Image (tube, rainbow, N blue to C red; front, side, top):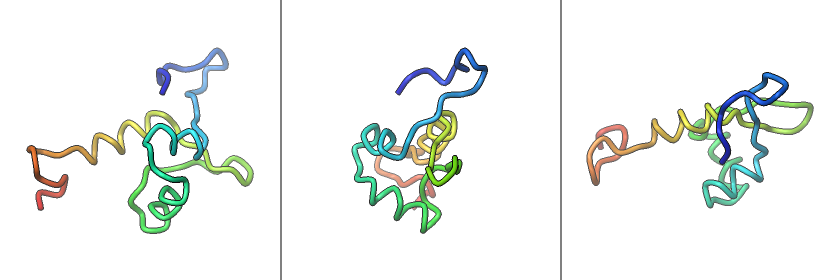
Length: 76
């Protein structure tokens, strides 16, 4: 994934669902399933397409990080 620095247009870069799938090494179908269950990163609708702000992906990944080795993010 590239830097989240604004592009020349001043806008933060967006990722397609296919790019996010490749980055996370999970199937596109899994990303859609996560959306339906409220588990994945927030997306933006651009027309009929889903796009993801890189900062939202980074924030979501940080929220998934273990607090301690072997412990789920929710402390379970």
